[in-house]
Length: 94
Image 1 (cartoon, helix red, strand yellow):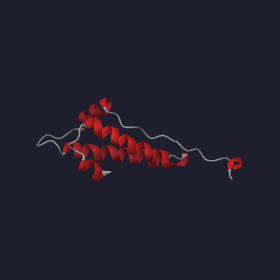
Image 2 (cartoon, one colour):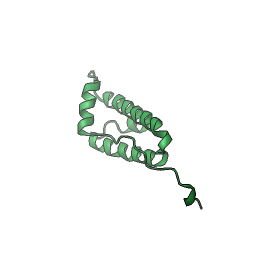
Image 3 (cartoon, helix red, strand yellow):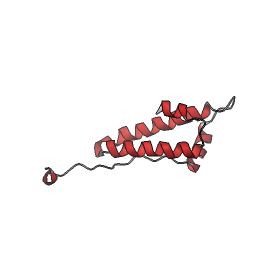
Image 4 (cartoon, one colour):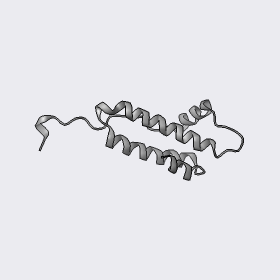
C-alpha cells in the first residue's frame, strides 16, 4: 500500500480515495471473517497513516496535521472495515 501511495501521491485526492477504497473493499471481502475484525481495523488504520504520510510529502514545508487529515477524510472518506464473510454452516458444506 505504501508503494502505491508513494507512486500516486501527486494524483487528485478523489482519485486516490477511489482507488484506495477499491483496495480496501477487496481486502475486506477476502479477509472479512467474524474473528478477524480487529485485524481489519488495524489494516484500515495503517492505510490511513500511510495515506497521510504520502499526502504530507507532497507539500513543501507544510505538514498535514491530523486535524487537517480528519477534515480531508470527512470530504473523501475511506471505507471502514466490515465483516463480509460469515462462517459456513455445517449443512452447506459440499
